[in-house]
Length: 230
Image (cartoon, rainbow, N blue to C red; front, side):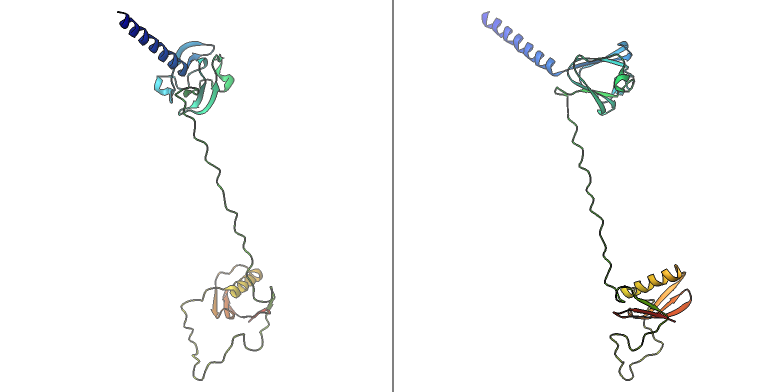
């Protein structure tokens, strides 16, 4: 008999200890459908991620009492946009904290039900824009001579061997790509005549022709200057 009594008393003590520990973890908050603790009441003892799951309680509470624990009451479901309230808090008009008829979720934050929000991601780091330095230029830094044909052969000129000249045979499919000299010439034409309706380069990068809005011009680029003439 004595052994049975001791076992019963031990079980009762253990149950009381578990009950006390559980009560310490689980808080309690009561929401009211009307201001100043009137109307329907909803008591929550666990986190509720969406009050729409509790009947008509989404965006309905107008007052509340925190009976135990620390809580977050949140404007949006999923515990987003929250206000923190502590044990003993009595708010007769939830408009005082900007949540009048605007609570969609609630959770205890000092017990086992609390799951902290992940930290926000770090702000993006943008690389600075590249700085483009002007390329080395023909023409000694910007000298362009208009309507003044140069004298003498262009740099790098070598006479063709006997019989090695083909007349009227460009051997090109369309204009060659625009290089540094031609960019300078193109910019000079735009500055003088405006944007073209059509243009075309023919010849070499450093010497040739440009057709600009139906007019034909010649050009030659040297280290000293750029000549453009008709």
